[in-house]
Image 1 (cartoon, helix red, strand yellow):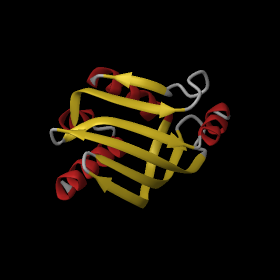
Image 2: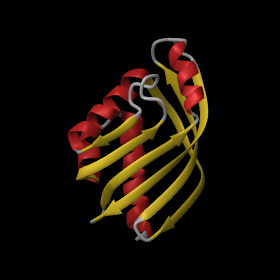
Image 3: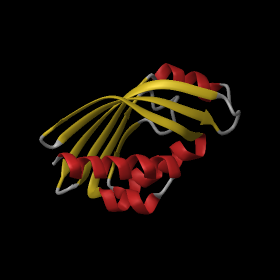
Image 4: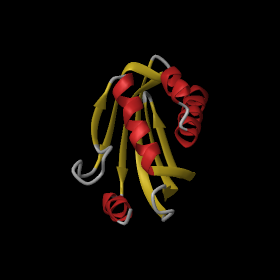
Length: 134
């Protein structure tokens, strides 16, 4: 599953950086679940999102607030139908131009060669501070 997993992950992150919703549709299961861990009252996209349309809305909210400038893998573990990636991310808050450098862990679950679940563990406080400055 490793080369197939590498391909799915590469397409997922390229779509994330480009805001490419068509590719998200291709690499996600119809019942995909995305969870961003953090305070939903302070981070507009935080919480759990179920199904392709809800996940596309999630990525729309993220993309409206932040530009993804770089995502650099630091660590990665792949086993069976799971992948855990630790990333160094560089974002820019669109409203202010403020740079945001944060490490995050992304946990993926795969089913039938597609992403069935994606969970983000990021430094929520850093995101809140950057968004409050906007």
